[in-house]
Length: 176
Ligand code: HEM
Image 1: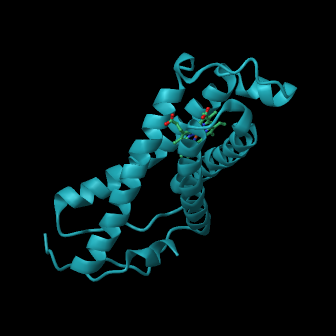
Image 2: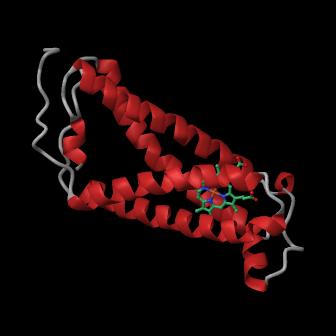
Image 3: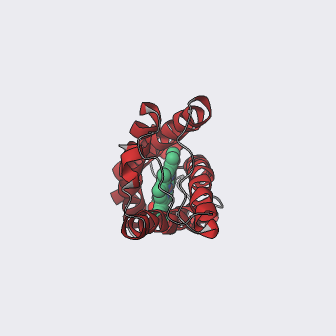
C-alpha cells in the first residue's frame, strides 16, 4: 500500500449523520460528568438531576437510532487510510464499538431507572422506593460502559490529531 496516498476529503457524511454526531458528542460530554457528580449526592438532593440525566440520555438513544438508520441508508465516504493497516482497522472498530456502547448505556440506564425505583419516585414524588446502588444490578455496567466510552472518545480524538499531524489531512471536513 502507498503510505503517502491522500484520502478524498471532499466526500462528506450525510447531513443527518453530521447533525446527530455532534449533538451526541455534546450530550455525552454533559451526561458523563453529570452521572459521576450525581453518584456522590444524597437521593433527596439529586432527583431533579436524575430526571435531566434520563431525558438527555433518552435523547442520545433516539439520536443513536436515527444515526444507525442514517448510517445504513445513505452512502458514506470510504474509510480513511492512515498508512497503517492496524490504525485503519482500529478507527473502524472504535466507531463500531461506539454504537454498541451507546445502546448498552441507554438500555442499562433505562433498566436502572425502572429496577432502582427512580421512575416510580419521579412519578409519585416520594423517594422511599429508591434502592441503594448495590441493589441495582444494571447500574454497575452502566457506569463501566460509560467509562469505556469516554476512553474510546479520547482515542477517537487522539486518532484525529495524529492523522492531522502525520498525514496533514483535516478529516473533520468529512463530518462538518
Ligand atoms: C450516553 C448516555 C449516558 C451516559 C454517558 C451516562 C453516564 C452515567 C454515569 C457516568 C453514571 C454514574 C454511574 C456510576 O459510575 O456508578 C450514570 C448514572 C445513572 N444514569 Fe446514566 N448515562 C447515560 C444515559 C442514561 C439514560 C438513557 C438513563 C435513563 C433513562 C440513565 C440513568 C441513570 C441513572 C438512574 C443513574 C444513577 C444515578 C444515581 O443514583 O446516582 N443514564 N450515568
